[in-house]
Image 1 (cartoon, rainbow, N blue to C red):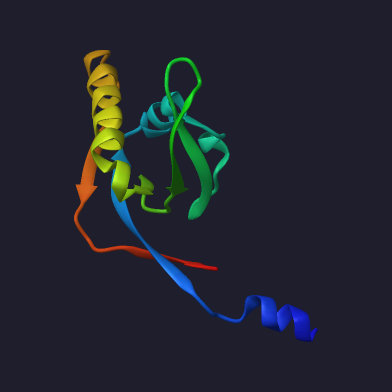
Image 2 (tube, rainbow, N blue to C red):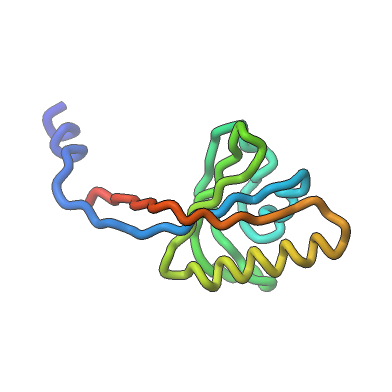
Length: 119
């Protein structure tokens, strides 16, 4: 038991700056499943999953967390260091789906979010 307590006691933490986005509309799951690996449709309300943005060839672009909220939108937390690239990827796909008549939208949240990783 002592070693477990030692392993989980806070020592050094590394902060990460995170970007936050809401994905809205009845086709929100279709949008995210076209951009990431992971079964977003199977998430229960207020359940999240670690996933990866991928390119058309299946290569990894960035990691992110996707949460299906009880408020009827997806909450996406991604790496602020890749924010411009991640946002452009999501915006391009939103426009593509909207041009097909799909019900999907994107809202950028400007709240502060800091994640800590215990080392």
